[in-house]
Image 1 (cartoon, rainbow, N blue to C red):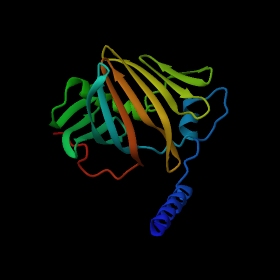
Image 2: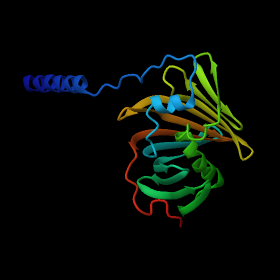
Image 3: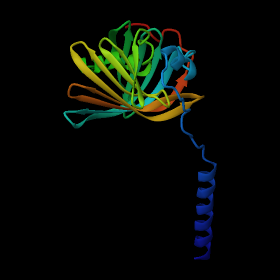
Image 4: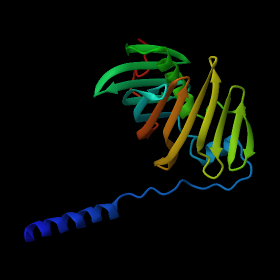
Length: 223
């Protein structure tokens, strides 16, 4: 009994130690402005030097409010408008898609029309600022709203992080909800994205993000 008590006490202290030493993620930087330009947003939030991103994500798909599928994905995005997505289920590759200049190319797997459309939109979901150079910026309550034809993006005015994006494209409405700020090397982003397209909903959680990763030769070669 004495040995069990000692072991229990040791495990408790060890747990407390690791909790105390765990990395604490503070809140994102706070900006106090009544107005802002897109150039200021890009500069102050560290987006100027970002030309490519690699994300490891978990994805859950629901249809008509019910579970449809889940899995993980590796996504590499590079300016201008290049995306390479590899989707996995139970560790097996089930889809390999390249988006080049808005055109979808399926390298392997079965990819329906909605999944192709989702893949096309992923670039603008992540690089949300890249297509808004000519947007009008309005202040509404605690938000800045970037508006242009067919698209509006809502930013939290204190963090300059996106909270919502509304897109009208290809005859359909697309809604993106962002949440859960996270930090990679001083670059703040929203780690949870909920994308609704007609009766489909994609819940994306970013597990790992790399900034300007080395892109292998042939990464975006078409099939």
